[in-house]
Length: 117
Image 1 (cartoon, rainbow, N blue to C red):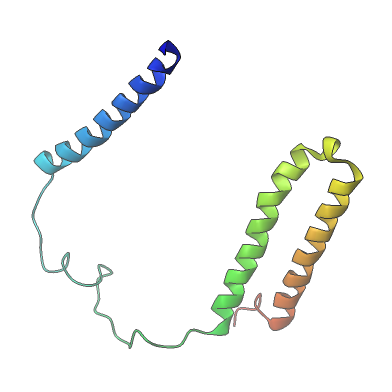
Image 2 (image 1 turned 120 degrees about the horizontal axis):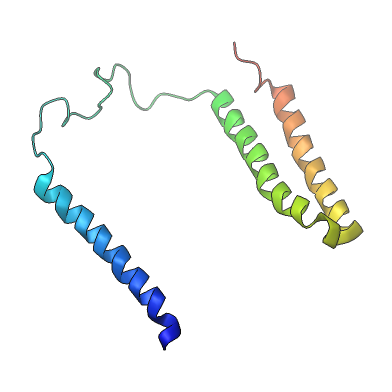
């Protein structure tokens, strides 16, 4: 049971610091509110258009482009670390994965997602 004592101490300290920060902010923090702080937006000006407006397809294409590069990086780091241990099967699997991502990138390029007019 003594092996779990550091974990118990860590949990007690973590909860103590968390609750202490919350209660300290409630006691010391300012409660002043003003009209702009309580408004819908804190950007400094009132909304000027209908919030149900249409988005251009370009925003969705940029989001897809971000996901493509994000997935590529997430899977390339562990693959690069274990490259010497995974052999030919791991290499071919990653090449197929990169090919699929490249096809998606070329698709977005052809759709004009990289052209900002």
